[in-house]
Image: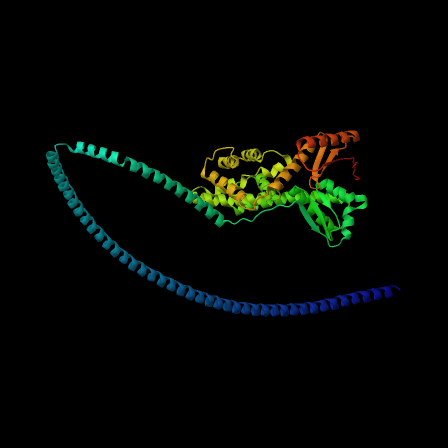
Length: 522
């Protein structure tokens, strides 16, 4: 048993040793293989690196050749341009030298000519002085001879001669002086007529005539019913907020807006046109559109005033004055549009001032602002001269402008050429045939007085004369005036109108008291 174990152990030992030797041999064989593979790869990498190096060297030589070629081309081009500029500079130097020589020769000739002229002048002066001396000597000799023969001195003879001439020609001198005065007056009159003729021929203004109504054309007569509204609510709201009289009759496809206030009528017309285009006609929408149109008209009047100032070449006018200038478009005086009249006066005054040697721009400025007070008289009343002066002083206008506002109605004496031009232009613009209509102005004054009487009553918010002045619509505050007081206000207004205003027929006083409750859901 023991022998079997020993034999088994020996066999196992021998087997292990044999296995170790075999594995070592195998491992050595694999290492040689790996080594050969690594050497082969390194050789391949070395060859590839050599190839890449050769390619890079070849590419660098190509780039170098291309750069050298570009350098040579650029160098040749720059050299050529430099040669051209050098040649041009040399040519300019030669031309300059030639011109300099010509100028020097010309200067030398002029200097020689001046020297000759100076010598001739000195020679002539010496000759003239000698002749004057000889003349004085001979004149003194002649005077001595005459005094000896006449027995009187030269001074005595001169006094006697002057007395005789004065006595003989005094009447003739007086007549000549009167003739000269008359000729001067005629010349001044012809000059004034010439200036006026020049001004009127160089500026041709249109004849202005303002109407009291505006006609709105409708595409369909059915729109009239929508404008009137249920139980007349829409048309009442329109008349109340705008202060105009809206006439809807059998005239096909047309309604009439009537008011003496052109600005108010224009706003109402635009409001109705927008409502018709929109299609939504109801009281709340009417008030919203009316307010929007009022804001747009304020912006438009300011913009128009700015454009007018630019056209006339005027600067530094206050924005509030520019807005009022644009507002004059909606103001009439004796049927003549106030803005058209103002522009006409400004242009005529500038032309007249240029003929008389005055400041053209200052004359235009004074002409543009001479009636600026009229932009506020239609709403608040008062004298447009005093209002215009107050506005111009508030916004630091030139004293010539203030003098023109006063002088064109005779409140002050004319103090400058520009003011005289404005006064003449104002008279010329207003006096030409067809420029104004007295009847319309008296009507406008009457309806303005009616509105002013109504607005002076306590509690009155707004007052509008409508229906060609036959009705005054008065809107009072519901918080401060009750129904009984509304009746009393109507009676007081009617009595005061009867006492202070002359009018044909009768005037209806309509006092409106409306209470509103407004709340917002948030």
